Image 1 (cartoon, rainbow, N blue to C red):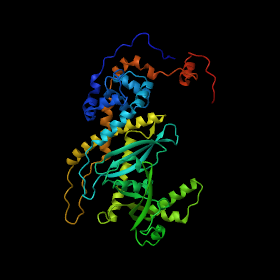
Image 2 (cartoon, rainbow, N blue to C red):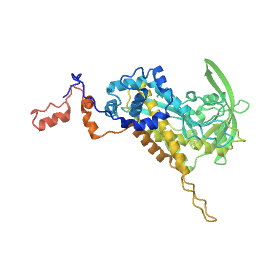
Image 3 (tube, rainbow, N blue to C red):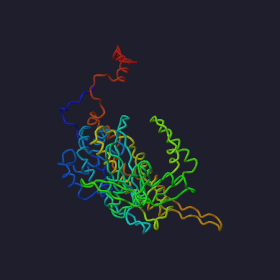
Image 4 (cartoon, one colour):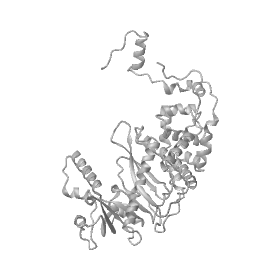
Amino acid sequence: MLRHKHHTEPLPRVQPLNHLAADWATLVVPRLPADLAVQAAQLGAFQRARAFAQPTDLLRGLLAYGVGLTSFRHLGAWGVLTDLADLSAKGWCTRLRSASAWLQWLLKQLLARRVSLRYLTQRVRGRIKLIDATMLARQGGSSAGWRVHVAYDLLAGQLDQVTVTNHYGAESLQYYALTPGDLVVADGGYGTRAAVAVAQSVRADVVLRIHLNSFPLEQGDGQSFDALGWLQHADGATRSVTVWCSATRTQAGTTLTSRHQLRLLAWRLPAPARRAAERRLQRKASQHGRQVSARGLFLAGWVLLITTLDPSIWPDAEVWQLYRARWQIELLFKRFKQLLRVHTLRCRTEASATAAIRALLIVWALVEDASGSLQQQLQANARPAPATLPGQAPAQEAVVSRWQVDVLSVDLVRQAVLGHWTWGRLQACLPQLQRFVVSHPRQREHQATAVVAWLTGVRRTPARPEYV
């Protein structure tokens, strides 16, 4: 077996392939901030031109790790084949961790400079932010992983804010910078009185799903509101009522108490959906060794929302329609994970995982830029809906598939980052690739090599098996 030793003679220099970086230079580099190199030096990502000629080369390598390369060894071999950098696997890992702050700065710059689309209604004074978080699992099947907190601009159809924490970082509005006029739409994980207080403190509105067990409600006189009795006397599928809540939050070491007027909206699930919700509740209770109460079964058949929106501007039906649009952030998570193949992270430490996630999010920001441009062009060239005869239902307008456009955009960005090489290039780089493809010496023998050596007569006696 070959051992890793320092070469006594320098390896022959392979002819560089400058055309491999053509797509990167024309499609990606122009989209980057002008002060990228200055920030790379200030944030400790690029101190001097040694392994890399310039900061954009380092960035390209870090993004390549996020768009499909399987390991740091793979990244090292890719760097040799593209003539980007001849760096060891450990060296690439070190560069990734040291560039974490720089990647965070770049991600914020890419998200902050976007221009939101013109608002579709004058009732919205700020952005409609769909807020949720998704988990990226740790390699090895451990329950611990990393949580990515995301705010999605509904009208612009793009990421708005992103924060990465470990699995202890619970869902909360504290990770987002809200501005006056913003409208936050979120699921039950954010349905707390503290979330209402945080949003109202900056004059932002909310539409949140809640659970009565964790969200006590009050009447106007401060008495407790009997939400269960109110639901039990419901005679329709939907209803709403004005309620209040008291909230306590901490700001700059000071405890602040506030009281907020809300609108409680209730929607009775259809029978099939109600039965499915009851089965989920019973299955979850069985897993934890608990019994489901009659109150819990009854509440499983309802969806409850609270909102601070003015009912004279936002009727109940439109609030429900707005909450249904929250599904778009779930589709974003699905596209992000499936198209970038990032359900599980290969990183073992929090520092490496945080940097890797930031690199992935930069890739996705570039994908969204390309996807938005493509979608506008395709929608402009879409065929108009065919005319219908009198009395017939109007034909549906042609809609461009966001999923398929993102598929093409991911391929575009991936090709621009990874480049390509030929068989001849691979053959020429074999001396430099040995350290990435040859195993390290180990005490346990390599089974496939040992068996083949025994069967072909190179070694007569097979090794003693440790187990069968």
